Image (spheres, rainbow, N blue to C red):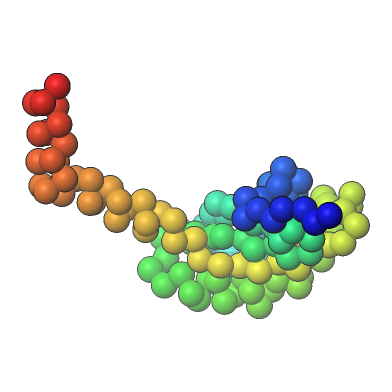
Length: 134
């Protein structure tokens, strides 16, 4: 009998993802990565998504105060193996140390677009019309 597959992450994937996020944040806060781009940038890690086998960790990051995020993302990916090695003491309970990949977090841009749409005159006119009917 096969298990039904679900696209939603399991509780274990969520828990491990949060542990990896906290560990990466500590490595970056301590300044262990020696790179001018990374040291000069405040980096926010919004989420870490784990693969179902917990061997790949995809970290979604937002470099704050930088117009071109790709420079920081590339620098993080260049140092991914070093960062992975520094995660060991905090994630020693894991059977395998996950491979770390860094991606740009575009969710804030999506939220901004949705907010702009909701504030547009067409939508606010429609919303005001609903209030009058009640």
